[in-house]
Length: 129
Image 1 (cartoon, rainbow, N blue to C red):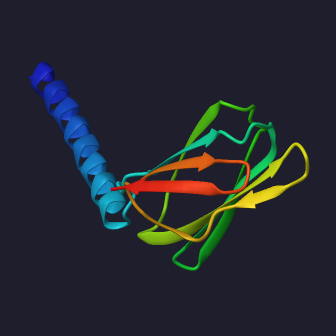
Image 2: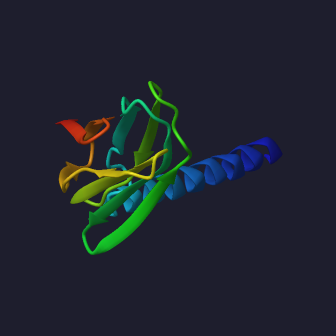
């Protein structure tokens, strides 16, 4: 009689854990926690080191700024971040000589892949979904 009681208790524990996991997964799905991230690659083709690099992101009434370390010429950096639905972004690069090069307002949404090419006078964007 004792082994059946232990098996029943183990079954109840496992069943409770499964219900808890499913409830958590459902909560995450309903709150859009499973949305894909935005991927961005920034390449420095300016002929100079980028001393200061920042990405300004606006999405669904949220604004945030992502800063990157300095980036040597002919090098690239990658980042991933979450965007709630749709949004826009702006990239600003301060070159070694003090010149600021920036991109216009780009459109992004969950799952976007963005490639930014920083030149000496402009930033060229390529977005794919």
